[in-house]
Image (tube, rainbow over all chains, first blue to last red; front, side, top):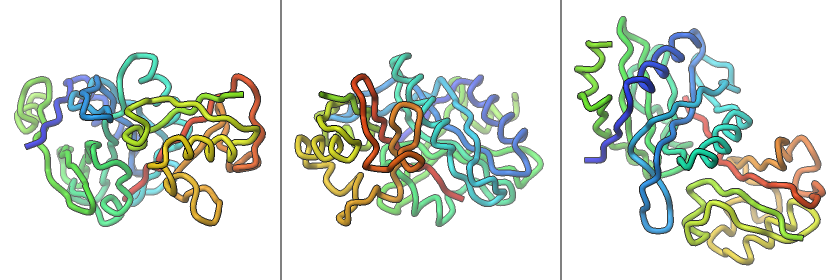
Length: 153
Length: 91
């Protein structure tokens, strides 16, 4: 099973940003050190979150502001990291990829992190989306299972 | 005049894993065409068959989205950097 490891700082930043951006969907990019896979570079350890403006300005849709993505892309290059996925919130529904998420997933090697805000406590899940197929990944936060970490935070 | 082109991870597989490549030309369109000639695996992924920028791709010349300049006809100067990024959206 593919795993995404996330520092507790990044987890806290993501959840705080998703709550701050309500009632709109929040979004941003995840970055971490590269792991070589053939001729491409991807990673499984998220050490940095780049919050982005939601250019769609919607509670049901998101579009990562391209300029915010560009700035993140430049920063990861300077720091020797790679973009390894995208984060967004679901303000009213469970944190499972919507048909639009699946249809528009740009990179089959990315991690797609979704924060569900439809319940009293935020809930984070991560997935791979490849050729329309969704597979949930294991999410570890600061070395703890995510359900345990949520209780601590 | 070679211009640096920054690639997103999904296109690096077509460029021997490189995060940046170079292209020659006087406009963004010419430079991208030159790049695709060097790395044919990118053919059709940035510019469509009818010669327009793909809907799900954003191309920046330095800090400017070329859709707000002259699109693929945007002139390029020495020292400029072109960045290609996938559009990231969902619901």
